[in-house]
Amino acid sequence: MNLKSRKANETVGEQRVRVVVAERNPLVVSALREMLECDGRFELLRSVQSGKEFLELAASTRFDVAVIGWKLADMDGADILAEVQNRKLDLRITVFSNDHDIGILKQCVRLGAQGYCFQFDDPPIIFETILAVAHGRICIPYIDINKVNDTPLSQLTVRERELLAVLSDGWTNLQIATRTGISENTVKYHLKNLYDKLAVRNRAMAVALYANEKRRNSKSPFG
Image (cartoon, rainbow, N blue to C red; front, top):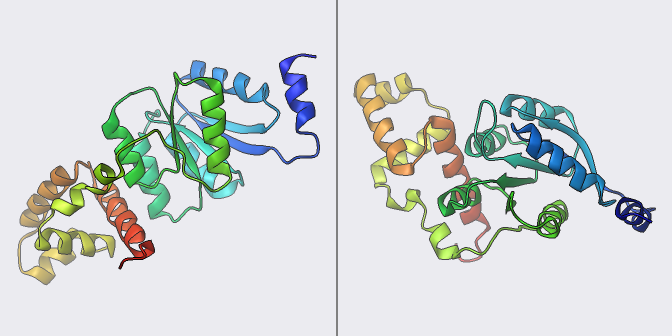
């Protein structure tokens, strides 16, 4: 009996984990597809190459876990995680990265990814990461949690945190300028400095970081 048949038989009567893959490299998608199909615990529902396609799929299709590459055709993983939070999509996401940059891992954790693994990891590690996330757990490589919590938001001034708060409430640049008595150009200047300090590129990513920190703080038993 081959590996695929054996795995399939082992999971007869069990519900398979429904997986969606978002990855721009067709070779990586092909490798993932072959790995998942050889393991009877998973069902690959669909693969897409762009962030736009993924977000549209996420809004219309039920699945257990999304496996997303860090670089897609039109967006990167940070953009997708930020959009998932902004749109309040109830998703469980594992980032499948080919970059061993600890900064990417920390950014994914801050933006709410539940799983993280590398493309060069052994298949059992990838499988167990996907399964853990599907079952409601967080599964990431070892990282000093204190360093994760020491986010760029902790370095903001009171005024900068106030600016971030009104951004999260949906204020436009014009509204901020009108209500604070400064020009729109000055608002843009302050926003650029804020984005640089947070190491993000746009308003959506800044708001996602802010929302994720608020959510973590609200769950803390200490305040």
